[in-house]
Length: 577
Image 1: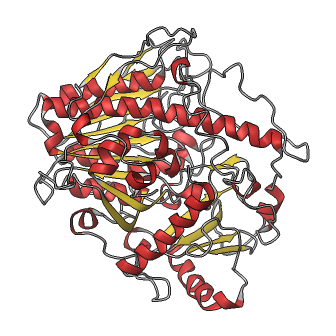
Image 2 (image 1 turned 60 degrees about the vertical axis):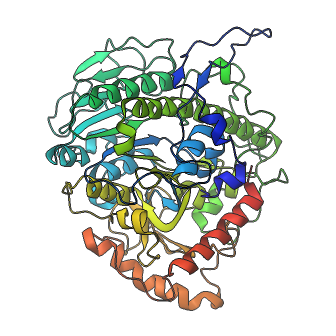
């Protein structure tokens, strides 16, 4: 993610023009168009809160116990921000962009459980999204919600919870979960995956028919209404309700977009084959008719296909055996399907972005914006063509690990970069710190409030990465379900595989992760330092997860900025829009 989004995508809209916009949305139904396709619904968004010179009119410190609003997307890559003009304009250009933001276990269910608990997956044990894991494995008796509630906040949840919520039984009550409201939430509006024998129609992943558990009752009225618009409506209504009280509030708003979902479009690729004739997984989100084709002229290749139109990496002989076995050469059929998916994902992000702007507009209208820290992120990223892996996540490669992280609030209303690392569990610790709340469990993350307020502190502690079902084999060093465990530093990405293989990338020189240098003698000292650190953090708990790293792995703020800028320059040269 580039904090230089304003430079990379241009100065999107002059502040003087934006300031004239009314805080109005003419919702959902577009005007007719001569072509017969619905026109984009008229929309004018909220007003950025810094003057054109970039001089903040806000206090220089964050208020005590501010409102906190977190919006989380699903499967959104950092470069998908290119299709979110309101997030760029309202947050990135008038707030803080974290240049190094990561999902340590880049898969929906483990990542969301990590945010809720502040723990790495090896401590909360929600390893996967299917049984015996998923929501049924998650103990949500104590979460960030109970902590913020106990600290005096009103708490509200909207949208996607954990996979199989509604379908699995609650681990806390052992009762069906479709009408279950977890502890700590004052206002609960969660999308539901109903059991097969239920009279509830729709599904969390049905964009045009999503049922919601609204404070213990099923709200099943949204057949034919696009899900992101329903979540947008819920968020505006909740913000209005919370603004009526003096009590600070914490809102956690979760969009399914751009995760794949039904109904499938008539032109969606059905069965896709790679160059060798093997099936390749390509999945897309549903989008409303008015947005279809919006980015077709701009997007001419898949996100992970190089600007030349070719896959960046065709030789994976240096990769671990598990990756070599997964490699699928992407011929024209596969590249066309991945292009289709990239376009649909961009459209889903665009619709979500408009609804996020509606929430910001309501916070401004009520006056709560002046006391609100607003953050946007995703649960994980996505590989879309890189390394011959098709469309996937979970793996510890940069497009999968990296997520957007934008933050604005009083005192943070000018465009600023932060290079310190921030992870899903660090975000939990940061929000708890803002609210003066106690962690619900022994915290594996670190608050980044000091980084927000005072600037970068340097990258001196590791980001631990982990996943399951990414390799096979026996290995005495792997003592649980995990099959890869890694360490991310300012410059290096290191992953050890069950069975003995390893990947090491020098990201300052190789942002695309083309060349595995794990066995390169030139990197022997770095490899040794990482191997010495790995056993200390692979099963870490609490403060064990943030040990000081060896000098060859650490980076002071200037060096960290140089490493990161080198990474993003190379990334944009290969893939940038």
